[in-house]
Length: 458
Ligand SMILES: Cc1cc2nc3c(=O)[nH]c(=O)nc-3n(C[C@H](O)[C@H](O)[C@H](O)COP(=O)(O)O)c2cc1C
Image (cartoon, rainbow, N blue to C red; front, side):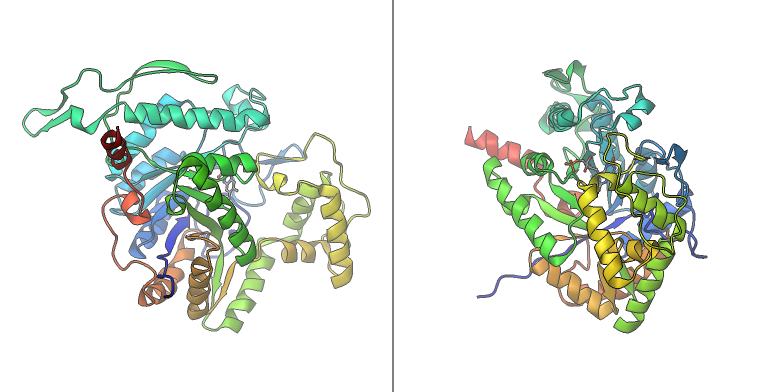
């Protein structure tokens, strides 16, 4: 008997500060105006997407000591945006990226519990661990946490936040229409936590929210990051969106779950993915190449090369050959406040490989950057894209995708109109939402179900 078809999960990553959005496009809108967020969220909800996703950057990116302004600059606060979106959507999940290094558990638990109440159970937290001292300077904590301690703090942060969220129990609250909600058990909300990173006690002042706890995402890629996800996350936001890399990542993290007594379906793998659609495959391919050229101007190409070379390359001609000099592998890095920097862990090897590629293909600096980065994951007619997305999911390269369109805010419209109906026809994507909360859409158990099982077992 053949395996039953997996249901695909789809999410929409708001194209805010990044260099994959074509900001020069006449259709590109503001990444700050609320109208952009509303358009994007309502398109995702119209298409029955699982959730909207907001990335986070806590300090303006800099390169060579200057603000990096080749894309857009600046971003509004995550909780404020998601709370406002809760009011203009009904079923769409609302996922915010919130750092465990520079925040405090009490405050973050309150914010997520509040968002979960306001949205009727749609809140999700992407726990990220960025530790860099550059970002920390905004918080008077420059360099306060060594890199190797970031997951130790993240683990304790999440555990502490869960203790606060769990300190209110559903059966200790009596909801009364006439008198309002009041407590039956005066101990509800009280907590004591003593640990390496947090030493706090008190009363948590937000009653238990519809989902009990926000859905937890994890986005780190290291061994520690994957273990953190296997131990306590509901979903992983990964960067492995090709078939082979996706399958390898998927197998790796799903195998880690058994150690924590968890089943493979308790952790969803959702890579970020880009797409370009055309009426035909050939038209889409042509458009995809044009989009890549527009994403990578000459100036952008030079700045990108600087991530690897770690040197000022502004005197180079982007239409000319790659630098002969080798990357500077010193501790200081020319670019600060961005994740790409850490993608090139061996700059000397990357530089060597890129020089060989450029020589073999007769590529300029700009050609090289266009051809090695930002290649869209799904390119083709709506039929081709729907078929490929489904193939990737059924072949266990992922459980779905977090789509990042290249136009803000209208880049999702064409996907919603043309690809989603085809996935629905194939029976692999929902035609209606499964229930009121994000846990319903993702097929995740409510934490109280687990507590109920534990209570029954004990
Ligand atoms: C796909 C992906 C998206 C990420 N998005 C963000 C983000 O929006 N904000 C942020 O501060 N860190 C982000 N990160 C950084 C990670 O959370 C983590 O801090 C970083 O990858 C270092 O952890 P690692 O060594 O386990 O990879 C992202 C990482 C990945 C892989």
